[in-house]
Length: 96
Image (cartoon, rainbow, N blue to C red):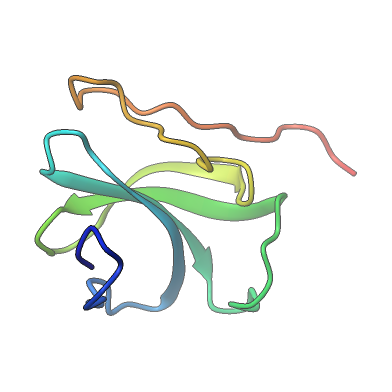
């Protein structure tokens, strides 16, 4: 979508619920969390098996960066380093 929130455009067309997109500062990449379809899209779980994926800013096939236990809270804030070379994220390792 545009900076003002107008004209949203879908960029992923796969079998996942893709959430929390973060555009890199150089506007070349988008990193996001992907949940399997069995996770309700209206839910915001914080401890589920999911993937951290990356794709080109203008669209293209996403690539898996990591398989994590996370979701809500994993990349809620700007996660890119200023030079767009690194991403910070949180993953859970304990059991509940």
